[in-house]
Length: 485
Image (cartoon, rainbow, N blue to C red; front, side, top):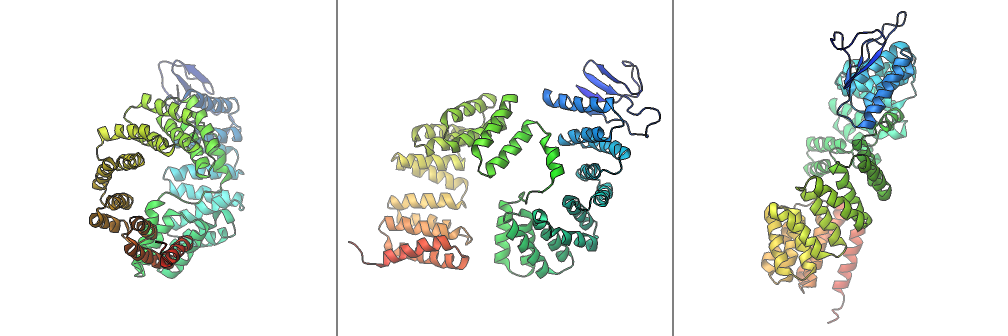
């Protein structure tokens, strides 16, 4: 179905104010009646790409406006529906109609500003954010958006004033500190910038852009080691940031009934540890859209965590029916089987990947671990070597290969891989040092083990790894006591 405008058509008679339904489309010509404000025409929108429920949702919003074209709330609601599905041009037109009909609505001004911002129209977005704040000075999200736009335009003083006001709003404080840090950085005040960035991380530790900003700031200060640590965090959390406490946008997003939205909401539930609720939401999504490989894949992962092997099997088979070339599905399925101790089946699943991707690092690693559990150590060693060949700097597979060689009595070669697992020195080093020490001790290499354990102690002390430090100190005390033999 298509919702569109036609000003000249040989197929349809143009009738002012009438919605004409024709084969394959809905055509809107004029929304305003004589004597009403001069409103923009309703937008031309194609809805054919959407599922039937979404098409009906959009049709219903159009019909409501057609029945009451001067109703500002209905025009805004049409804009919100279109906005929910990223149809921003249509949303902007609808919001503009609503603004003409009711200039007192801060909600409409804010929604219009967001849609313009998302469309790259910073100047008009700034005007609407200004208007929203004038109409409702107590809506912090509008203050944050306006501050970001002002800073982008180089109006640092005005932006700083707004960010400072946001420090009184708990939900937006981390973003406010990030903004203040950027302003300080632009003014050349690196220590002040670092202070604000650190405040932001205290509030939201996985704030990716803040880690990047800190990496640059510490590099400017000559503190390369700290800079490298923050750059590593940035690579891990690139797209992470504190959630926006924005009731208006939340209301907009709730209107999105697409599979994409269900997956997004399920991910939020998953991240907060609500696995069963996440699975239920995705089950509802695949019931309406059984062709969604992504939703089935998410369910494979969830049911592996929930240890529901019947449902796991069902969605694994559904993925393969839709797309037989899905190594990620074989990997998740094999991992779940391995975790359940079903090693033979797990090995079979990993082999399906290796048949087409012989160098797949994860498949080789997991297959080797499953083989070790079954005592097939020679096969395990071969696949560990394949994994290291695929990623020579992968610390985990270097450790696993080194440990396997150590158990097999190949001490000299093992040492090379175990040492590689402990480099470079970062927050993960202490873990590899500790486990390398334990592996050496289990093969009666107590002297070497103590050397690694002492290094682990030093790194744990320097890095503040208190919990692991306790384990290290207890192990050292045991090893330094009388030898029971």
